[in-house]
Amino acid sequence: MVSFKAFSAVAAFTAVCIYGLILLGVGAHHQDPLWALGTALAFITILVVDVWMFFAIAQDEPFRWE
Image (cartoon, rainbow, N blue to C red):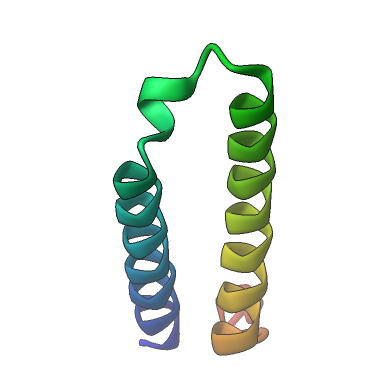
């Protein structure tokens, strides 16, 4: 159950970030090197926060053997 909560939180955070990126219009500026670099950094940051958030919420529950 804790894993489901963690996945839900990660999905919600990612959806909000994607919505924000769409509002910024990153798709329209993909050929500009600065926008591409900024978008890449945003994606990496979102990924790192997603992983951190999952492990902060689920802790070691997904890896416990019963």
